[in-house]
View 1: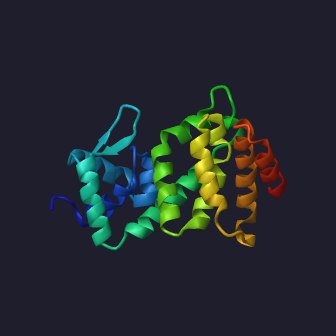
View 2: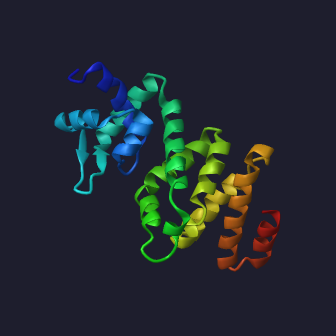
View 3: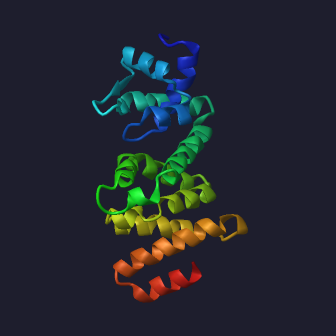
Length: 198
């Protein structure tokens, strides 16, 4: 009741985030401007860390999720969430995802709880194409982060989807990255098959 009508519309959408969020993602997914985020902080709905990352208390997040579902906006907001993460990851320069300082890798790692939530939603909500494209955008993340089993699981879920002309490029990327993980996991014959199909 203490929220303005606009704040009442925006606040439930923040429920789709896991592990916090940036101001940029809040705007892309929930239409939460800096002014709205500040208002939420003033009303103790949102906190901000020293690094500038925003967080919802888990009880508030659960309540917001109930409000989002009741308003019939859960599906659309989760779709925006997955799309915003895909866009963010695609914008990371490939050179910043290599070894060394790897600032791009750190960005993905910071958002990884959100990435996992988005992937879970994509494959549970029959948004396979978006899930495949998100896995393709992640490319070498699991290999560089040495999170091979996790990466392989998502890649195999993505590759289990029916092939189509629209997903050909994303599928080729995922097949290649799957081959890399299979290779480092000493499954050479299967890796060769993945490379050839890619």
